[in-house]
Structures are given as structure tokens and as C-alpha cells.
Length: 322
Length: 302
Image 1 (cartoon, rainbow over the protein chains, first blue to last red):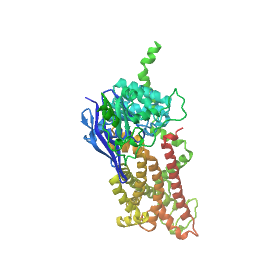
Image 2 (image 1 turned 90 degrees about the vertical axis):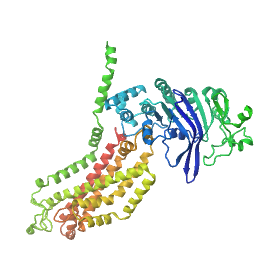
Image 3 (image 1 turned 30 degrees about the horizontal axis):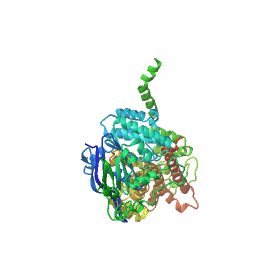
Image 4 (image 1 turned 180 degrees about the vertical axis):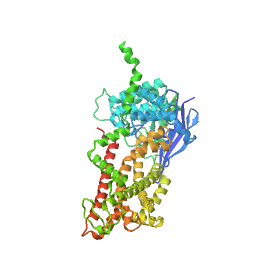
């Protein structure tokens, strides 16, 4: 059985100015111990999907229109808020984008980690503190610093604390929302390496949200490329990186400058992401697509399976397949 | 041998290190930082002296506050009556010291009431938002539309006079302002990622409010309450002045001040000494409030 199965998830933001279709018919599957990379531009619906899994979306305006989120077989959208509170932090934990703001500035970091442990485990305060010290050691922070406040830590160290907090209750699923975006490159490498080590040690599955394909290449087993709230390409790391199929994925790869060629200008994808309140008809990517045909403007492409497990949402493959 | 000793003792050593560190408690840190603030210490000293005077009023005064001596009206300060006597020949020093009891007590009680209500209403409105917020805030807007002193006059006319009733009358008009302050602070704190992170770790609403939001709102609460004590002392005097607050012969700073008003031109002690007491009290509470706010902010730690 899959640890997490998202079926046909659609999340809209309903406001007076209109309905923003942020996530549309998303399907995802994640097995125990696997890492999936969720890649896309800003506004593609990655974070909304992640917050939707934890039911952390502010409602209104957010509204989960359809779909199921099966975690170990239970639909998270149907359980009560009390049960959800038991799942959050214990079974599913989240690492936020910006470690600078993700820690309470007036609580000692040790107390913040201890609090999570005490919240989900029947243990004495002393046991929780002992476990907190183990967690700090695990993420490479000197135990004496447990009594310090977040502002006494550097950005990378704070992210370590956040990771220690997220992993303190041995969650089965870890959602990392751009965990390294706010860090500089050398610290990025350290933090990612540490996350990978811990993940393997504890057997945690992970959803890694990022817009950095390099991070995906070194960390993920599966990749889902999101565009305008849809998954446009889905497959194993190998399939995505060696058989680039969707024009959008192609554009993403082309926009990375090559090391061995001397280029003066970067090659971005032309145009902008469509307004989620007025998505184009047919294929959502058609206004920016270099292969766009008449049919693309009218027909909404389904997901075609071009290889076992490799799905692409593009009409070009439908014709080839037939 | 040495190596095994070092590694073997690791766990205990860490434990003891951390325990040593824990001896520096949060309250201890705050107090130490407060001690380093000179202005704050001046404020604290004045407040302590005031509290001492009001608690031990019987010891520090020679005359009962209500004893009239018509032969000694309008005495200027001398060694017997160190602050002189008033229009009924009562010792001004005694009246001021005893009056401090009423003024301070009523001010503190009324701030406590309005702040408690304000924190509850404001944090609920700010945290939950939506319809709850609209309902609470519109009701408070209605309260706010009535001028504070007018409200206090109406309530104390309804309840009658006396220290506790005066405190209630004044506190009601203070609720909307403090609820508004708390609400806006809670709203800005709520949008921080660490609050979202606390929800994501499975904290209940109550836990999020009490552990993560309210401790971050403590600075405006403290500043607001210290300033509120000063403002309320003024409000009490205002009520006493029009005969609704504390009734004579019970002494109260405001009523002493207003009873000296007709003699302002010829007899200054009845105006200057009560004003001095009120001013010193406000000054001391403001200094203390500022110092506490700085001491409570761990970011200002050296």
C-alpha cells in the first residue's frame, strides 16, 4: 500500500474578485521511504498542495473542491480537526521555507523542540528533554545551545533546529517546502546532505518542494513537474531527466545555463504563468509553448503514459501513441 | 583510560551542563536586564517607596487623615505638618499618603479588569477572525463611540460611589482600546511562520494562543498597562471631582487636588503636593514600563 495517495485533488481560492484555480486535478503517489520532488515556478500550486495535505489552508478563501488525500489508507479530508491535530507533527511534519521566521523568537530552541515531543508522546518532561538533546545532536548542534534563543543562531543552524523539530516525533512523511531557498549555497549542500542522511536513518518519506532542478537530481526518486496547478509531467528521476517530454519541462532545462558552452544570455521560457483566475482554454501551457497547434487551444490534454510510470500532459504524445 | 572516561561521562556531563545553564531562568534574565537599566531602577525605586508609604501609612504619618483642626487651617509646611494643612486644618501629608491607597488600588484594579477583558476579547477576535472578529469588534466599536469619561460617569452614576465600583466604571471604558491593541498585535503575530509551524506540529488553538502568540504580545500589554495606571489615576480624580468617585472624607489624590482649586492663588501646598504625587507616580510607572519592555525582549540582550 502506498503511504500517501492524492487522488484528483483540486483546491480553489474563492474571493470576491474571482475564483483562483490554484490546484487542479492533482494525482500523486508516494511509497514508504521514497522522496518525490515537486517542481514548478512560483504560483504553480506547490505550496498549496502541501498545505492542503496538512489541512493548513485558511478557509475561506481556500476551498478543497474535490479529491481525496489518502494517508495510510485514511482520507485526511474526512477526519475531524482533533484527529488532524494528532497527525500533524506526529505522522506528517513540515519544514517551512524560511528558518528565520519559522521559530518562535521568545522561546528557547530546546523548549520548542521539547514542546513538540511532549505534545505527541506520553512521556515525562525529563524524557522529552533527553530526546530533544538527542535530536539536537543528530542535526549537529551542540547540546549546550538548547537554552539559546533563535536569534542567536545563524540561518543554517536555525534550519537545522527546524529539521530537528520536524523529525522529533519520527514522522512517516516529511513535507519540505523549499527548505534551502533562504540559505546560501554551501549551507544548502550541508542541510540537504543532512536531510538525506536522516531520512535514510529514520525511513521517512519526503515531499520536496523546490524550483531548483539540481536539488531534485541529487535528492529525489520521483519527480512531478507542476504548471498552473496541474501536474504536467510525472515519472522517476531517470525518466524525467533523460527523457524530457513535456515542452514546459524542456523549457525549464533549457533555462539552466550550460557549464561547457559560452553563452551571453540565458534562455528563459517566454511569457508568464497564466492568471489562475483566468486560465487559458485547452492546454494551460499553450500560450507559451513553441509546439502549440490549433488543437492545443481547444482540447484539454489528458495525462498520457509514454513509458510505464512516466506520465505527460501533452497532446503531442496522444497522437504519437495512436 | 582518559578517553573512555571522557566519552563515558558524556551523557551526564551534558546533563549537568544543561542544568547549569537552566539555572539562568527566563525571569532571572529579565530581572538582571532590568537591574542594568538605570532609568528603570529609578522608576522601580519610586514605585517601591510609594507602595511602602501606602502600606505603612499609619507608621509614617503623625495625624489621622480625617482629623480637622480649625485653628490650624491653611498652614504652610513646617516641622509639625511637613506639607501643611488644608482648608479644614487636616494634615496634607497624611491625606496624601492614605489617598495613595485608594488611587493606586483603584487604578491597578481597573487596569487589571480592562486588560483581562481586552486580552480575552482581542486575542479571540484577532486569532479566529471572520465572523467572530466582526461581532466582537462591532460591539466594542459601539462602546468606543461613547467618550470614556462620559461612560465612566454613566456607569458610576448607575453603580454608585466607592472604590470597587469606581474601578469597574473606569475599566469598562478602557476595554475597547486594549482589545483593539491586543487584536492588532495578535493579527500581526499570527501571520508569522512560527505560528503556522506550531499549527503544523499539531498544537491546538488554545496552545497556539497561550504558548506562541500571547507571550509575544506581552510588550504592548505591559506598556499599555503602565500607561493605563497613570491615565486611570487621572480618571478617578475626574470622577471624584464631580462627586461620583471616592467620597470625602476618604482622601484621594484627585479630590484633594480639586478641593484645593479655589485657593490656588493664595495657598499653593494643596495643589502642588497632590500634583507632585500624581506626577511622580505616572513618571515612575512609565519608566518602569519602558524598562520592562526592554528587559522582556530577548533580542536586546547583550
